Length: 333
Ligand code: KG4
Ligand code: ZN
Picture 1 (cartoon, protein in one colour):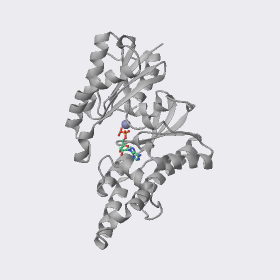
Picture 2 (spheres, helix red, strand yellow; picture 1 turned 90 degrees about the vertical axis):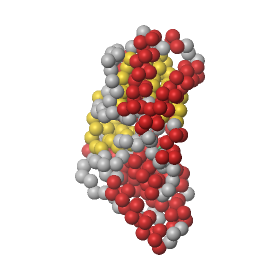
Picture 3 (cartoon, helix red, strand yellow; picture 1 turned 45 degrees about the vertical axis):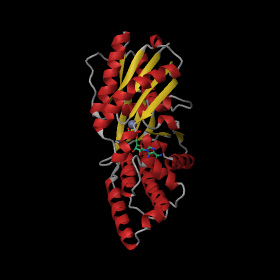
């Protein structure tokens, strides 16, 4: 029997979760609205908001799970990658909680946790499987051989897919974070209305910076001809941009599935919440005979539930860390 308290504070979401024997009992997420007016995450403000949110979020997670503090057997926390000041809040809290309650500490890699979110609900993938991890800071194709035996076989050479959504939204004058809004407008638009270029990057790697530049020039030129172009075509623009991002992502995923001979294919990370990507993946599954795995919506964007499941599997292996542990802004597998 194991009850884990998990803490996530790598970016702008303060989250705490309780997991009992691999089942998530609570997953509380406090989103920091303070960044919206700046059009992106302001690291100093994120750290401060984590400091304000962390105790109420943890108390909420414990009471929602209907457990007592003394039932907790270990505390798992995101060590990295992420914003250092944000990670420090979660790490320091977790160390203090573990010390005060005399329980072990478990460190978790945020990107591995996004992938391990597939082990929260049924059906769960079989090893080995491929995971397209798409977030605000990362775009990776990962070959997952076991819970903690993962290899990045392709990744972005510049911007992440989430950044491509967020930067496009900025060009389109939409507020941060733009991904969910582009998704919303895209539902009403024609994905074939405008053609944006597909980058020619060898192998399984990605590039999104050229797409951002082509959107910038496209909007600038069309606005010159018609000052209302943007507002009159927002749905078609969003649908076309989203379509291009999806074809880039799925093109490489198809190639990886073929090269590695793997038919268990999954997506994870904030961009996996995108309805167009989820739908296109389901269609690819039918076409290529894949078994696809898509996390429940609440486990796609940053959350402590995924940290809890990763922490639980480390707890089973007694993979603990000491009080001298420090967060890492960059952290590989
Ligand atoms: O995994 P995540 O919550 O945080 C990081 O670890 O980066 O991912 C955040 C990213 C943002 O870029 C956000 O715009 C994007 O995920 N995102 C979406 C959607 N929901 C979140 N992008 C496209 N469509 C969505 N529905
Ligand atoms: Zn994330």
